[in-house]
Length: 416
Image 1 (cartoon, rainbow, N blue to C red):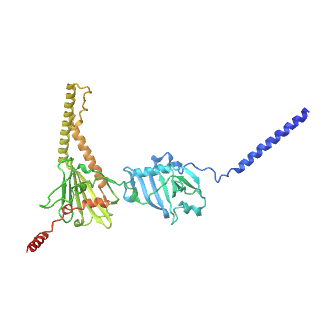
Image 2: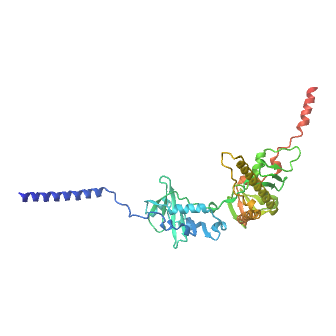
């Protein structure tokens, strides 16, 4: 009987093993088959930890034409197609970070005939809609075709040249194809409260000169207003001093590509600051664009006078604080005595303070002229309009003198 029981247990055990194996087979059959072997986790792993090693970025469009060439040299990043004008490094770094961190979300087609649907066809094609990004400085060519953006999946279709597999990569990888879109567009930023005088001169018409005698003056005065004439709007006049504040270029044209017209077609503007900086502008119209050339200089006499005035003010302010602190101590108030701040350099060492201030001003002039030299700039139309003004533009129209006699004549006729 024991022998029979033992045989029964063995049979049951065998049946249990068979059942487990069958269950495993059924379960595995229900799982979806992998469409392709596992791929890389990011679009360009070579770039992920080596952004700072990149020395060049080229954007290549249809027919394998380089449309933007960004190069890192001794003067930083520049744009070859714009005569080596400085590039917007913030914008470039943003693109590099996005590409380096673009994880691959899912594989897409391997069929070359369907590449155009995603914009990842080879850029040798005449009708290629994507761009090929090529990165230099990484030891070997590193390239990526960037295609259309998928709005539904918050991603961009990409493919490495030579690889059949295309992918959906995370993030909107927007690549500008126009060189001017990569320019460092900051041209000048001199706030209006620093401007002491503005002189605007048209080829015809009376020059317009506005000025302040002190930085704290609310509005600018207008010089040489004819007797009997009045300003239209004092605030509008003051706004003319803000032209150099937040001035961004639209495009930069190297010397030789655009020459100024004759003098009788040029608008001139001069901006002088309280601390001695002077910026001269020549501006003109060319087709539907507004172009300008700039230069900067420092008036050392004005700079010295301003520094002396600032030092005198700093000394007076410091002495006033000392006096207030001493008075508080003598009164022995419940509150702690006011302790003045440490004496500023303008008080402790006026000569060194003057040297530092002049150095900063000269450095500013050097920076501006390095940016201005060898270029004509396309500027916003409203900035040009601020320079294209004459004295008559800011004054109320001259009263029609013919109206007076006519009115009197009418009154006399009525009395009769």
